[in-house]
Image (cartoon, rainbow, N blue to C red):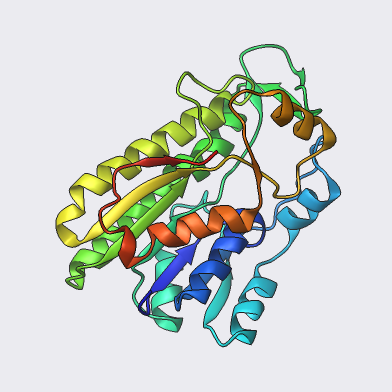
Length: 265
């Protein structure tokens, strides 16, 4: 991978942190965007809560210690001004951005059924304006504004190479008990596929990655049993394994891969 500059959202833990590290190993300078969140859901493990509430400074420091270039920038992606702010920060400190990884999620479990807990012990609440807003501002609005900012700046400087990668877990026929999450991810898929077509003439590829169940700190014995019983779930992946796929899609070798949802199992 030749020198590039990437923005990775949600880069303080899990897949985002692993992706920042993988891109840095490939020679990229990386802006690690993050937001500290109190993941106080009763079904969330201590490791998951700790990851969500941490900053990304340690990720940036690890990259720097290995000889790379990285900065950590806290940003609330529900603020429409955050997209331009992140690109400004990246350009000022690292260089023009030609890789965008939309990893951050405003994940919340909501349902059209009664309030309660799901089979994994996570709180599920009825759909309302608050649950919709929390999910759509991050997974749909922020992703679209970041893609738009990427495209505008890329075209303005006459860019001829670029990569956009998003993350999804949404199912084809909806996402029961996580209905706003599924709908917001479906919107992000549509934005990303549109970007793949509209920006192809500018040397940009755009894809979504659908990871398998990934151990970002929330895996419990109940989840492992669910995966073991499922005929469709094959692996519990590590964040680093998923990050390697994202890094590949951001490489020169993946020039012919665009407008795809890449499903990992």
